[in-house]
Image (cartoon, rainbow, N blue to C red):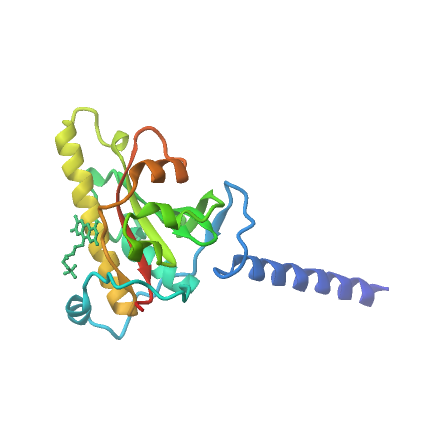
Length: 225
Ligand SMILES: Cc1cc2nc3c(=O)[nH]c(=O)nc-3n(C[C@H](O)[C@H](O)[C@H](O)COP(=O)(O)O)c2cc1C
C-alpha cells in the first residue's frame, strides 16, 4: 500500500514537471493568462565573439528573414542585452536618463506579443495575437520571426523636465538599447535592423498601450535569408 502511494506520487510529480517543460518552450503553444510571466533561460555572460568582432559584424540586415524560429535561449539573450539586469542593484545593460527606465521593450512573435520584464528576465503577455505583420511598413520587417518594439513612457520622467528634453532622453535611451541588440545579434549571427518606420497607431492598439506610452522604434530579428 505504502509502495503504491509513493509510485502514484512520483508519477504525478513527473507528469507535472513534463507538462510544465512542454508548456514553456518557445516553439510551443502560449496558453498563458494575461498576468502570467514566461521565464526566459538565464543569459550567457561569456562568448567566443569579441566586442571588436561584433562591432565589425554590426549592420542592418534588410534582405528579409528566413522562416526559422529563434530559440528561447537566443530570444532571452537578445532581451538581456537590450534591457536585462547586469548588477546586484538592479540596474540594466543599457543606460537610462535619471535611471527612470522610461523605455520598455515589447516583443512580437507568432505566438503573441509580450512585454519584457527586466527584473524577472521574463515575458508578460499583452496580446495572444500575432501582431508582426502590422508593426513595420516595410516587407522585410514583416518577415521576421520576432520584432522588438521600444516604447517610451514619458510619465516616468519628472514633470519639471521640458517635453523636448524628455523626447531627447527617451530617443537616446532607445538608441543605446538598439546598439546592444545590434551587437548581440552580430555575436549570435542573427540579422536585425533599427526601424523608425513603424505604424504607431497599430502598435498602441496591438500592445494595449497606456495613454502615456509612445512607440519609438522597431527591430526585426531573425536568420538572414
Ligand atoms: C533612427 C534610425 C531610424 C531608422 N529607420 C529605418 C527604417 O525605418 N527602415 C529601415 O529599413 N532602416 C532604418 N534605419 C537603418 C538605417 O537605414 C541604417 O542604419 C543605415 O542604412 C546604415 O546601415 P548600417 O546600419 O548597416 O550601417 C534606421 C536607423 C536609425 C539610426
